[in-house]
Amino acid sequence: MIKSNNQIKKNLNKKKFSTEDDHIHIVKNLVVHCSDTNDEKHLDALDIHKMHLSFGWDGIGYHKIICRNGQIQNGRPEYWNGAHVYGKNKESLGVCLIGRNNFSKEQFISLKIVLLEWKSKYPNSKIYGHRDLINTKKTCPNFDVKLWCTENL
Ligand SMILES: [Zn+2]
Image 1 (tube, rainbow, N blue to C red):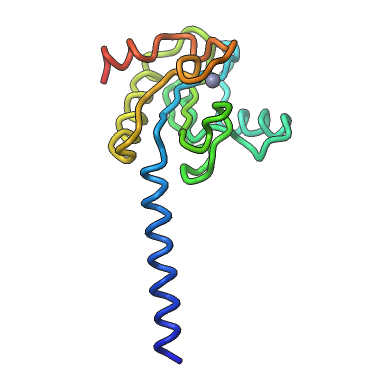
Image 2: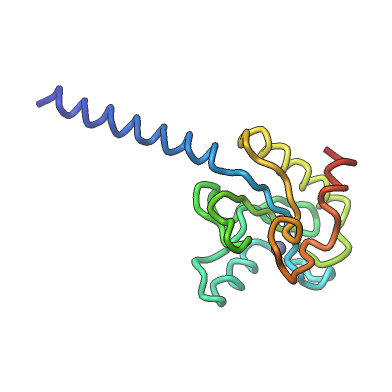
């Protein structure tokens, strides 16, 4: 009896590790967004959470939020599929800068921290701006992410 319990436990542990390991290899896209809200509005993850709930979603669609003052806030846990890049949510993580056009110096410092951390954690990942990853009418995040990465990472 004890032996069989241990066997179950062993298998569960195996499963847990393989799932976490899979997730780390599944993530291919690190997607940069903006909230497309007035640059003067100091919104945070809770505001975005409420906004996305009002769309009928399961709460905040991004995994990280970067506030106007540079504060990094958690959104959806990384192992949950996001809701931020149509058709590619399963293999993507999303980080969202609060604002529309003029992001603060502090926000860009935090963006660098988030993206470098994710890059080291997810070995198959590459960084994209929302508008560059999928065919969309959106201009999000309203700056050239590829160029920014070349100059800053
Ligand atoms: Zn976006």
